[in-house]
Length: 161
Image (cartoon, rainbow, N blue to C red; front, side, top):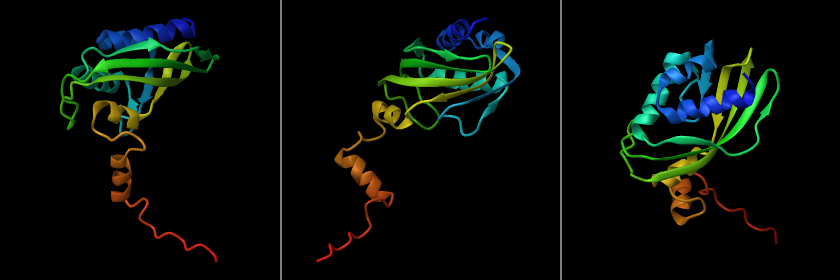
């Protein structure tokens, strides 16, 4: 299977809401991580649990190809656009009813044409802003949040004079 075929099927698995679609794409020792996983997930069972959690919160989630894929025999990267609406709670985050539309990149290690390790990169702060749980960057609310966290509370240096 070519890298393009592999990523087409990977995107279809995420968009298809069927954990069985991941099975023919991954090695038995598969590892996965993204900004929403507290630690790397090991094995298809762990990936299936993570995917189901996301599908439950975002029932219409889908991935679309958003750029050129790059691949060698051992590594591959694929940019995707992630779209969906948070219709139900995700862990402690109640349903917002807000749409998501963000870019992500999967960086993967391959083994004999299968995914051995996959890591998704995306801007989780932007996702929080889109869901309405974080203030927009540069806004007064964002500055206040940084101040509460201890940033920007240092005394200013006096100018030399």
